[in-house]
Length: 148
Image 1 (cartoon, rainbow, N blue to C red):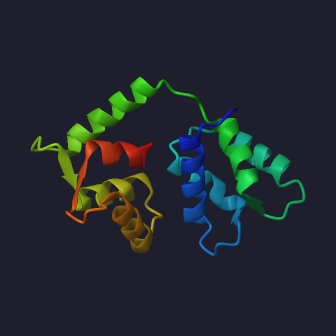
Image 2: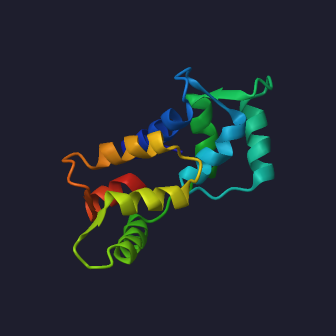
Image 3: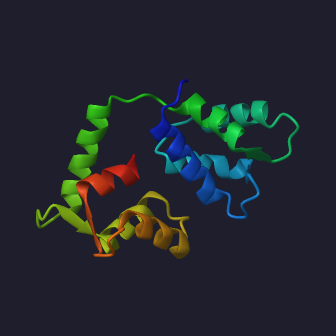
């Protein structure tokens, strides 16, 4: 699969979140969580077989390139318009007042729902990155960038 820059950026960010020691490797046990974080559908048995092909020496870890090979074998190319439409609808559900933004506290709750394994520190880092002006609000564009 030929990956665009945005997809590679997303994969790098996901890998970095799970490579807590900055060793350049993640455990093969965390790959399922990483794929879930990316919103990727997969069959657990197929994932195990794919990991075994990549981690053929059974080291229990993969580097970034190995992760990319695993992830791309499960990634589906969705129509961008469909994805944006679904994200817009999700954003509207959380923008209850119709102000055109959600609070970073609401975003924190959303991220916890998506991945309950994110630590408070991980959430703080994500929020800090997306709320560059520190106003505690995220508009649809910021929300879309984070979710894609």
